Amino acid sequence: MSGIVNDKSFNSIFRDGRSHSVWLDKPVSDVTIQAVYDLLSLGPTSANCSPARFTFLRSQEAKDRLRPYISAGNLDKTMAAPVVAIVAHD
Image (spheres, rainbow, N blue to C red):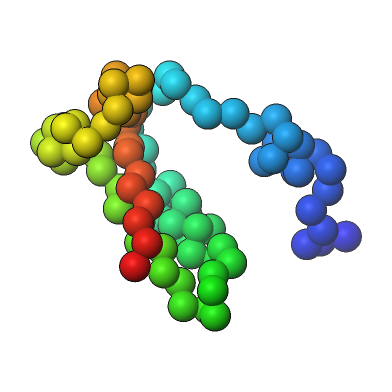
């Protein structure tokens, strides 16, 4: 039946999902970023006000501006990522 989330999907998303610390050495397309944003924008919000704000950083210049605010344990993997997503609350 279409639209039903099965146990395999729950495993992939919630039970088996882990943070990644290494990345493929290839760019992330605008189409992929838009698809991620489209899914994120459907998440539950308080009174449907959609307070989350998403910023996606791809350029080295943008990531360098972020560098002073990244904890030491996350610095190398964040700087190496092809895209860094900042999720803020409005």
